[in-house]
Image 1 (cartoon, rainbow, N blue to C red):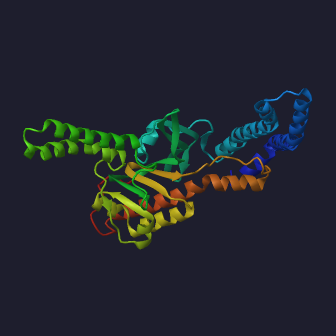
Image 2: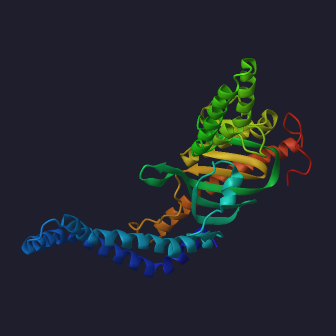
Image 3: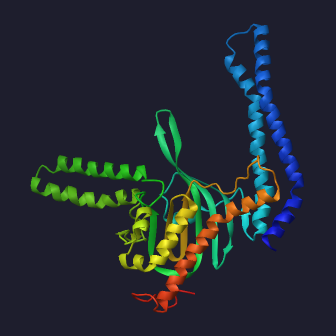
Length: 369
């Protein structure tokens, strides 16, 4: 079916949902408008009773109407996701589950985020754009922090992760990060960085304490153990991951590209991947998104991590007509459309290199299509 036919069919089915949306908005508005009168009546009732010291109870009772209004709007948003977003995504050929998300294994496989103490994900979307199969989810990561009042979780990242399966492969991993943001999103892992510092200074103190016999060997002892603890620091800062290999920063010639991205990986392989056409496509992708992103290309997969996205959140204030549905479709497929263009540019240049149409060494036989 054509897109307009899909929208027309859905619009006809959404009349009951539109009626429910209007009822819920009307009820929420009435509850909010009645709140001042409710507060006044409670105050008069408390004064008539003559009981003092019940300010907290009065506050809780006053909060009932706005609390009910917010709760009903929350339920309405959830209903719109299931009865609007899900059918619309499925009509476009995707699989969508509002309450499920990417597995933690998918997130860690990307290598674009540090390990976290708590992980949340929703809005699982899976499907195909052109020759590229993908799955994605909105994710949030939290680090545990201990305070004098107990333990709390602090959010270190919120965004969307896309994982694409490609009909071509990369010999070695290449990563991209927003200029100056670091190879991983979410910043350093405080626990691992502090672990490195504690280990280093602990070794230093032990060396000073027990190294009285031969001062000449003290620097060697302390330096040797510091090198052993260095991986904790590199891993905590996101500069090294076991099994992935070194992440050397790659310098390229494109001024506009260099202003937007830092590149990490093997110098030769990164330059093979990031041809002028691919660099232009990445710059265009960044401008189309309007936000920084991280990316990883490894084997026959590509990951894109975009901060601060909330793709499938229908607005209760928008009427459910064809124009609204068209806007949702464009918003929800925008990232995928732009990612498809980028990956097509990557594939074209890999194919051209394989056939010897670009300078440099050819690609490994059998790695493309």
